[in-house]
Structures are given as structure tokens and as C-alpha cells.
Image 1 (tube, rainbow, N blue to C red):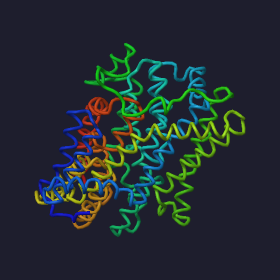
Image 2: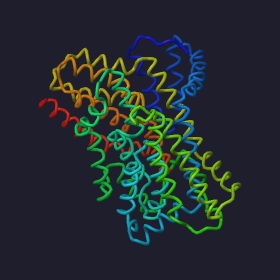
Image 3: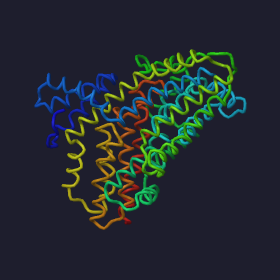
Image 4: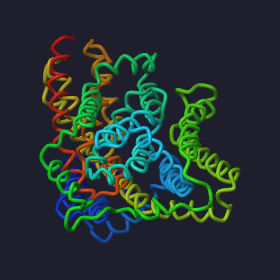
Length: 474
């Protein structure tokens, strides 16, 4: 792989190209691939052929990281799990149970279900959106509400909720970053930063308000009007996922039962902290988030298989075929994630995050403006790189030590670093969570970006003001 170079304005060109192409062409694969190619072209001294070779090798190198490989694997396994519980009648039984009780027999009920599932399943952001999308999409279609609204609700209750929970994959990752900075009590610092995470709290609160009221603004209003006419997608738009593979027709002989969905998902959620404890040698805070997530999804799939076999509802051959079809339906998503990870890697090699952060540091602003500036810098880095976790890895080592040197409390600066990463992640069309949310809702990706952006900008404006006030008071 080509060596890293000194950060400069050219470091921002690959993500800018990917973002521009994604918005202009609606071709996510082409856009991410072009960004990866340009990044390696720059690293290769602007040799386009060498850049092409480097891009191919860079995509392969993504799999050399065990954590990346686990992420891609659990994407396929969660597809198998969703298809299995759907084919076994679990999702249909759950939806019918809700409708019998009148809990999701209205557009508001459908929106609230998507919101609540997103809040409850908090072990990892991509699992959150995939499960919430699978459960809620039939209700949104039945109630003639837009899939763009569904994508917004599950996106805003994924990363924003996960970053507020210390004992999940996100918490384990942040605590590890804090430990690397020599923070003596990382868990205490993480917990104390939660009330200061203005963007995450505002994003979740706004999503709750939209779920209750159905408030649609700008492009979302257009999407809702189209959905009321029974049209899932705008003219010329289409999802990048095989919807039929993820939502197969029922297989086997048993009637739809909600328990066939609820038990595997409950086991999956419960297995996450257990995995953190095992991989952390008894300490949840030192466990491997990616390993625990993969174990949790595999455990949920195993339980689903066991229940359907015990009920004589499906044979092993049917379970295998359904699982493979579900995993196959997620291949497009896995490829998108592979390209997104490759783009994030080459962007880090080019030093895009360091270039932006250095520009802020050179500005020499006072403490009263530092907090909102940390938030906005993190947002720019996340928007440009498409990764909140990568943004955390860049911003936390800068903001937290800087606060310590200035004699300022660390919690608000940790919160601003995390909040900026989440805001940029929500707004970026090349973010993996944004991409997965559109795929989980089976809606056009750029349509999701455009309809979500006004809400993200609104919560972002609240966060800027909030961090300015906090900065003035500390």
C-alpha cells in the first residue's frame, strides 16, 4: 500500500468526489469506487493506472482487518436472520399481533414502532436499522407512508442512540480510545459526557416528535404525498437491495407467530454484553465490539433455526436455502460497506481529518468558541470521510488532551467530538449508517439523504447553540 503523505487540501478531494457523484448520479457504487480510485491516484503521485491498481489492492486490504471482516460477515448473517424470521412467519405474526391490539393500525403507530425498535435494539447501529427496517417496512407500506420517513426514523435512532450507551459496541470503542489517551476513569468520563451530547439528544428527541406528529418538511413532504398515492419510489428511483430476498414468502407449515421473531431478537440483544464480557476477560468495557456483535447475530440465527425446527415448521434444507437467500440479498450492502471502508482508509492515509483539525487549531480561537468548533470540525470530518468511528479516532485524541492542557472539563469536549461525528454521519451520503438505513428501508439512497438532511441540519443548529452555551459556562 502506498505510504501516507503530508495532509493538504488535496486530501479532501476523494471524499468530495464521492459525495458529489453520489448526489449527482445516484450511483453509490460508482461514487465510492471513484473516490477510492482518486485517493490511491493521489498517493501514487497522480498516476491513474497505479491508482487503479492501488484501489483494487486497497479494497482487498480492507479484509485484512479482522474487525472489518466481522462487520461484513455480520451484514450477511443479519440478512440470513431477517429472512429466516420472515419466512418462518415471525415478522408477520408480530405485525398481526400489533394490529389486533390496535397498536400499529395507524400511520402514527407505524412510525412509533420504527422509533421504539430503533431505541430498544441498541447493540450496534447497523443491526438497529436492519431489524427496525424489516419489522416496520410492511406497516409503512400498508399505511401508505413513505419509506423515506422510515429510513429517517431508523437512521436517527441508530447511531444517535448507540453513542449514548456505554455498554455496547460503540461504548466499548469509545472507552478504548479514551484509555489510549491515558484517561484514568474512562467509563466515568463517558457517562458524564452523555448530558452534554447535544446533537445525539436533539436528534433522538426530534425523531420522537416526528414519530408522534408525522411532521414532514421539505423533500419529506413530497415523499409522504407520493406514498399516499401508493407509490413506493419516485420516478427513476429504486432501492439498492434485493427486497424480495429479505422479505420472502412464508415457508413451512406453522402459522405466523410473533414469538418466532421476538425470542431470536431478544437473545441477540442479550448476547451482546455477554460477548463483551467473554472477549474482555470478564470486563465488559474491554471487550471486542465487532466480535461480540457477530457472535450475537449468529446466536440469534441459531435460536431462530432451533425454534422453527422444534415447531416442525421448516426443514434444515428450507432453513439453509432461506438463510442463503437472505445473505445474498445483503451482498449489495456488503459491497457498499467494503467500498466505504476502503474510502475511509485511503482518506485517513491522505490525512484529511488531520488537515481539517490542524486548520481549526491554527485559528487560535478562545475557549468560549472552542466547543462548537470541535463539534463542527468533527461534523466536517465525518461528512467527508463517511465514518463516525473514524472521526472519533481523529477528534478524541485532539479535543480531550487539548481540554486537559487548557484546564477545562473533559466531558463537554468528549461530547462535542462524539456529537460532531454523529451529525456528519447523518448528513453524509457516503456514511455507512446512512447507506444501510436506505437499504434497510428499501428506498432510494439519495432520496433518503435529501429527505433526512433538513432534520439533521435542524438538530445540528440546536447543537451549535447548545455547545456555544456550554462553552460560555465552563
